[in-house]
Image 1 (cartoon, rainbow, N blue to C red):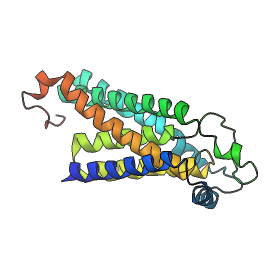
Image 2 (cartoon, rainbow, N blue to C red):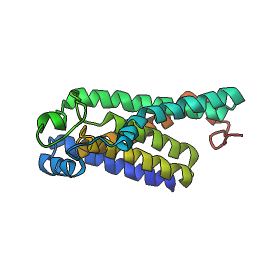
Image 3 (cartoon, one colour):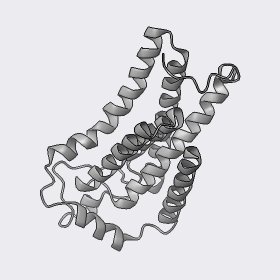
Image 4 (spheres, rainbow, N blue to C red):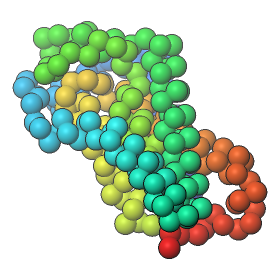
Length: 212
């Protein structure tokens, strides 16, 4: 049931992201919502740290799980780490391709007197790379553990990362929605690909094991 709900959310996000890109971004509601979230002086250390956490949390989950698996000779932990690495790698590749294909200008560059940042970012805007990375990690954890006390905090964190990107003036709301869709898609791709690559392991019925 939890996996089906995640799939439903993923499908909704993909459809929203597709609608956004095919209509060349509905700028008025997009920029209006961004201006509502983005303050004139977005210098909150909390939201800055939340934004950067997309990288160190995602990396920490993957590398930490791998170290645990190697140290304890825990095969399930190793495969979970491989899956996380594949998921976040897939999300980052798709994010980069979309950025260069769609070539959307950053909101602070397009609206310099309406969107405020403490540090400039001139690279492409859609989708949000921080958000895609965070949602790839959160979705991978939800697919691996199926526990609400892991899934709920993971998605709350991922959603906070997305919000932080708008608070800091780095991305439009549609960039964040697109990033969430890409991240979830990367997680499902990683989940599928990991089981294909290591089918000999999962065919033995090891996919539901937990750490010792």
